[in-house]
Image (cartoon, rainbow over all chains, first blue to last red; front, side):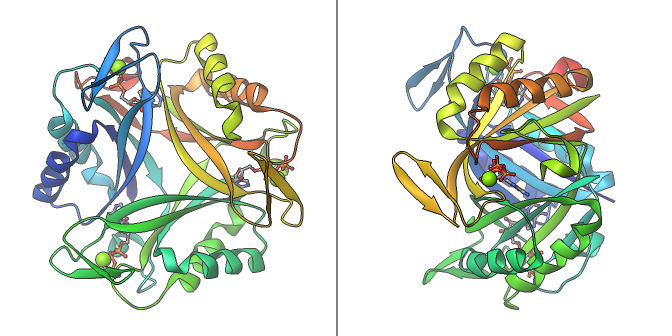
Length: 113
Length: 113
Length: 113
Ligand SMILES: Nc1ncnc2c1ncn2[C@@H]1O[C@H](COP(=O)(O)OP(=O)(O)OP(=O)(O)O)[C@@H](O)[C@H]1O
Ligand SMILES: Nc1ncnc2c1ncn2[C@@H]1O[C@H](COP(=O)(O)OP(=O)(O)OP(=O)(O)O)[C@@H](O)[C@H]1O
Ligand SMILES: Nc1ncnc2c1ncn2[C@@H]1O[C@H](COP(=O)(O)OP(=O)(O)OP(=O)(O)O)[C@@H](O)[C@H]1O
Ligand SMILES: [Mg+2]
Ligand SMILES: [Mg+2]
Ligand SMILES: [Mg+2]
């Protein structure tokens, strides 16, 4: 019924990813701070002019609740808008959601998105 | 066996949501900072006297690991305690959990909650 | 295919947990700040010399995307490295992941880890 698409992206890509998601038509999103690293622990990543080696590089987490049939497209939209071609560009994953509720109205399911 | 109930709520509702969850009997929770927006991108939301338009409004994330049979009730408790009737009240969703472990004891499953 | 293993641990165990995960061979991880409490609401937990009672104690969240067959081992690695034997040691849980993408290359699935 619903999926949660989570992206860990480079912070300077957030505005473009937001715009691309809005252009696609998502109805909301949640953003938070994180840090991390991927496969190149010996290499460095640059963030705001500073080099980060081996350790935790600042990233942004974006989460989007979507209808089942939009999960693959929303994943693609995030990948497309976050991509710079440099290492550390990010990761996107999809998790099943069994129920969603909208707090203001108490609605559930697709209508709660 | 277990579910993870996640709520994104207005920060000023956190105390009431915590109390309601404790009154229900949940055994623990995780809280973190987030920001986001829902369906009214043209409208404004007010947070600490400041108006946020179009963009990311501060929210709080609450996560509660619960037994399967409590997921719907815990969702309802969060919705009930977070609700003010204003736009931006929040979203609650439920994700399946395949295993839980309690670090101190190494217990798994329901006993680990 | 893939799982997301999430651990909420004591902040002072992060370095050891990271090292243990690297020794196991995980390819990346995401770290963020959180706070929370578990079953002993009347008791206290100590963090940086300060005592926290009843309320939200600072914790660290670690998330690791892994191949299905590694989820149990990675859970065990986090439990083992985070464990001090004191209350508040933490919680680890496993959630199913339906798709993963690597932003730089657009790869999906196991190859995207
Ligand atoms: N296995 C993983 N588990 C959890 N989070 C991960 C994992 N791998 C990467 N991440 C998160 O995604 C962020 C970006 O990872 P990154 O793009 O470096 O992945 P990668 O596979 O090394 O790809 P690339 O080769 O393009 O660098 C990391 O900083 C981390 O927060
Ligand atoms: N589709 C979504 N995906 C992920 N997070 C969302 C989504 N929609 C809302 N959120 C999160 O929930 C928070 C509250 O959303 P909000 O209550 O405004 O939802 P809504 O559907 O617009 O409801 P309302 O009409 O009552 O405002 C947002 O700030 C955001 O963090
Ligand atoms: N039911 C729960 N739902 C969500 N998060 C939880 C839950 N229980 C604990 N946590 C998170 O895990 C952290 C550590 O919990 P804690 O180790 O105190 O669990 P516990 O079951 O009380 O174990 P212990 O008896 O060893 O203290 C908490 O601060 C909170 O962030
Ligand atoms: Mg990398
Ligand atoms: Mg809204
Ligand atoms: Mg405890």
